[in-house]
Length: 477
Ligand SMILES: Nc1ncnc2c1ncn2[C@@H]1O[C@H](COP(=O)(O)OP(=O)(O)OP(=O)(O)O)[C@@H](O)[C@H]1O
Ligand SMILES: [Mg+2]
Image 1 (tube, helix red, strand yellow):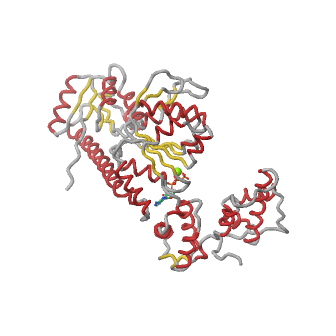
Image 2 (tube, rainbow, N blue to C red):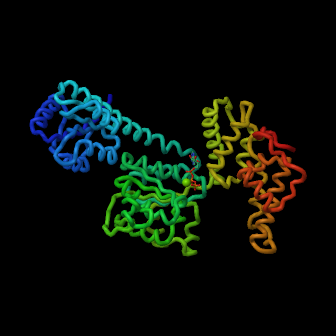
Image 3 (spheres, helix red, strand yellow):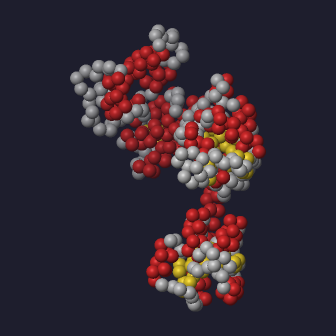
């Protein structure tokens, strides 16, 4: 049985003392807790400090009007229901109030039942919202760590470490190749922490232009740079009491690294163009797929920042080091896409299993996920056949062509161009010059492929087969 969640008080704003008294009595009789104030300014102040489940406000007030208060509430607490009451009701005003986001509009004098009815609806809605949040949090606890598939010793240890570290406030650094599940780990850490009901803010440092990242993180004051028309609250402020996940931190510029270091040391920061020192309470999780030690050696990453971040380190292993987990994950994605596409593919054939186990997986779990999505689309039997998996041969060649080959003559650019030409030509031949399949296999768009063919002066013979639709699953011999 579930215990009803406690309801925070209701905020009532009216400059008439008698109205405040009578509403307090009606609400108290119905079991509601009320905070009554006589001005919108006071109401606004209380809203900043306390939690309320709804606001009832008179339209005409001494200073700021009820409508202005409504507008403020819509900006700062978009979820908060606001009911407007007025002695000067006109249909036009009523429509305007509802348009401005009021949930209801009552004309004075009103029957207590009318008001109680509206309040009851808001209370019910609030309870539902709370219950949903609580359910989500509970589900998160069981679900998120479960979502990290893998029974290899390293993956078991990783899940265990998540459970241990999540409830602490420790800063976490996640280092791992692309596609190894860094985001998944960060999400699980937040969902299992005491902060799970607070915000979880994720910033991809590589995706935001360097010049904007600082203001994104720490906010800016109005006029601090061209285009800063308004004051902006930074993401660290939004994350207050919650968790902030700085993804691709290896791509952060050195000046910003210094600012981040200071923030980590004492939780303080200033907005861009501001001088007021602000302080928040956030937990920081950072991740990168770059070789951070090398970046330190190259003076691209501050060593002191590394030590600050490196309180607890997570190291999701590359997929090729996870043994049979490859098959577990493949089956997991198979089930997932099977349901999504409404097919009835039951399992992996032996041949497919062998092919999956033999591959090197440079793109790790993300690559496996894509491979399985493609396989489910292509497969027409009840088992995934090796033919529905990509031809990993070329990728293997790519890997072998790596450091073990004798150094090429000429400049890096020329060698790369030669290699690119060779690879594209071979892939084209393999697919009988079908552009679609070739682009698909190389993981680039057809447009990009055509551009490269042109730039590298690749002789494609007469014409290539542009029209052939989706791959059929049968590779040409
Ligand atoms: N152990 C796992 N179990 C199930 N799914 C996983 C696992 N690891 C990763 N995935 C899935 O693989 C995909 C890639 O994972 P994720 O985005 O977390 O990688 P990443 O390490 O952040 O990669 P990048 O460095 O490229 O950002 C996601 O769809 C994720 O859900
Ligand atoms: Mg990622």
